Image (cartoon, rainbow, N blue to C red; front, side, top):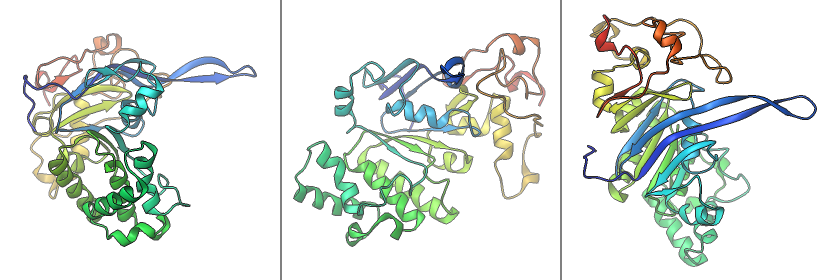
Length: 331
């Protein structure tokens, strides 16, 4: 969905940081911090899907969990409809839980194995006192039908379902409270390819039907390309690039984005229309990130300024944090 200047963001993330202390010794003295999310900013507009992509350990999931206060930010602001979630009380946050939901990566471990599916789905309604037990049972039947499962399945336990069915149940649980924003934390990464397509199509259909807004976290660029309107590329806790899906795939500006695209499989690799960038080395530790640009240790275009100065995320519709974007170098 295109973003216009007249539209107001549903969610604004401003300079978000999440640091985890490193403790050592008998008295657990803090000797450093793991900088899982380090100064992340972006806006999400109603009805769109924002993709978050990057390698493992880049801070995608921590960012997603911070957006719904499953992780308390170390610094920064998360503004949902103008209200800063980082500063409100637990009581106020409880009221907003109906508008903010999350679909977890592992559809099995996120479901209580001792409860029937019907009880798991009805629990949010009863906890927020939004329905009686009889009404909740009816709503469970309705939501199971929406996600493509027979209502009789509500009497089964999680272990009696396949991985794809369990993920549909996770989606159903997120939808029970009719939220405005859903964080999809790698919802298809544990599924077979054919099941992935079914779940992605279900998410797209539900978005149109219920006017949902998604943050879609994933490793695979194929899933992100299919479902996202805009994409945020993250590396070592920072935003490297942010633009529409079309711009990211056709005109990437950051070398790291280009590397991710080169790793994205296509039917005939010989048909790639640009030279592949070679990257060397491993991802640095978030407990000791490099000075300057965090990507300079692996970037083939890095110069002295990259090793000393942190690049700012700049641009209008296509944002990039790089001293030497790809259009300024010979690729």
